[in-house]
Image 1: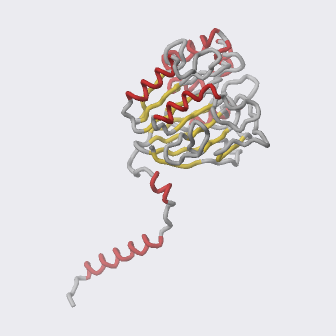
Image 2 (image 1 turned 135 degrees about the horizontal axis):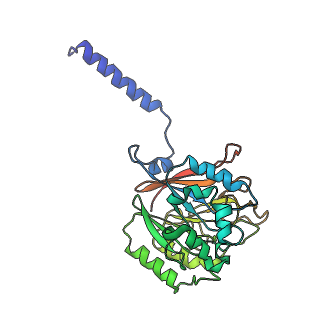
Image 3 (image 1 turned 90 degrees about the horizontal axis):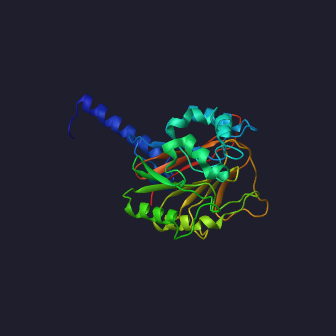
Length: 308
């Protein structure tokens, strides 16, 4: 038998101990382990909600305080200033709270924003961050992710498959080299909400996104939080290539609930009792999500997945 020095014996014992600890350590579920990013990678953060500024609610004050402690790019999902998106309402009902994050905000337009001059005060308030005035659709890049912002007020803009907006979306998707993509607009294709039903007019958008392997869609309009499993434009579960939709109409402009008898297929998480924001951490080939709400709320929803 070969003789080892005391130092060598100590190293062997330490290695054996580490091996035992590794064997006893709890293992991540396979799906989460696959989605978990490298520890050294720093993600980009995208955080926000829709249905925000109301002078009749203090919910926007509460959600703005959440943004105060979350760095990153702020998104909005439309209906930024109630009830008609006037210049006065942007100044009195949006500016006091979410307005302090204006310099890092990339907004989407909603139907309430377009009630005044087809959204004129919205474009004037957000400036270049809102894209070309009068359109409401634009794109940007964040940590290698493609971010697409659309205008879903389809009674005032054309949302058909051959529309200018859809053609722009198609060109953006086909010319992009991004591995991961998130798109956002106001009206959801899928919903369990009782106040506003699903809006089939945005299906051409969802179809294009699905055909090009997009990961995420973010919507507002219904004043609650709802997360769906990845699905096709026809609402069929598709764990391999499906698009995961979040409805995050919890920015502060009141809350409304869900249909008792008509919960949408593939709906996986729902809450209509608390205001809050959705925080997305965007890694090079994966993402995590977390619904962040005030300390008084007990509702939680978080998870992780890989890009297609």
